[in-house]
Length: 156
Image (tube, rainbow, N blue to C red):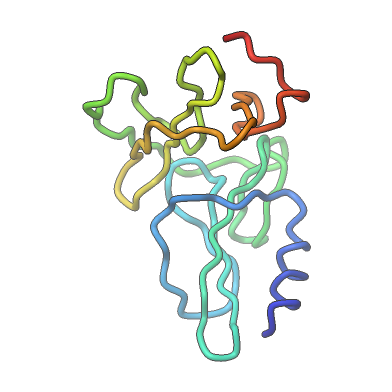
């Protein structure tokens, strides 16, 4: 499968965003597979590049969950998450609270650039702390993304 085919395949998943900083799964067959992290939002697809099967880790958009039987993200209103969440132990950092789900969360600063990432490491939720939006971008806690200051007003 060439890169164009992989891009087309990814475009078919209209309600996803790429999940970052997750433990990389091993692919043994082509398809889409659930990541058991308590959220029902994270999954991966295995694609064949002609030589190897490679995992691409993805996350459903807000208000969508991954349904393994269908191999895609569907609205939370049409399916029920059957996974349970295990909270991570409290870390030594003082700027980020306990993680209970995958996502990016603001760290209070006057420029609205700082945030932390909660991710599933295969065993529990872990915090990647002291992250900062690049250049002039600011962190929007609603979208959980770094955005242009014209689209989000920092309350500092």
